[in-house]
Image 1 (cartoon, one colour):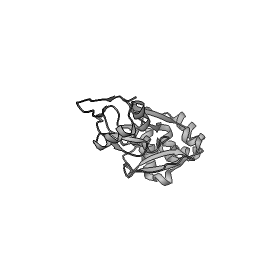
Image 2 (cartoon, helix red, strand yellow):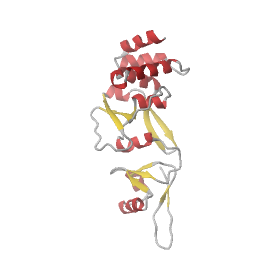
Image 3 (cartoon, helix red, strand yellow):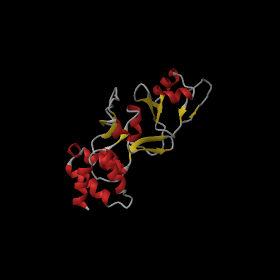
Image 4 (cartoon, rainbow, N blue to C red):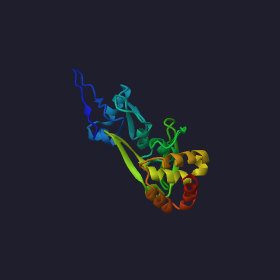
Length: 205
């Protein structure tokens, strides 16, 4: 749980947030003893920025920044997917205009932020649950699909992602020493795109 350092002077002044977390949920702040009034004071002082009803950005954060840390604030069950995940796994040189985020088919996002921009994909439960890994950096973190699941999803959504982008991802993946073709083919079979995957592999290997 991110700690918050309290500063008391002659007149009571409220906290300066810890630099170890980029975002706080309202629930975390309440557990640290902060009332809605105190949180509002922090926003007025510029120490917190309100992202939505549940999350606040910590302006005192001094760690490594990543747009991915903001996804939980807007899509609590969101998983970084497709080209955004491919960038994380160093599989593509293509830079998308928005972060690709997968959520369960029945999940809903009430408000999409102006920044960071998000492309939201509603996955079936089977597709959503397969291959999720958690990336953590101190108190910050996000969910993302592992490398093989990322490749399989890109092949499945190749018409949306782009054929040239899909080829680049596959070629780069096949050059990786840490590739796991058995896992790749298993995922492809489970996601019902093994035929397309094998066609690509036959050409590229």
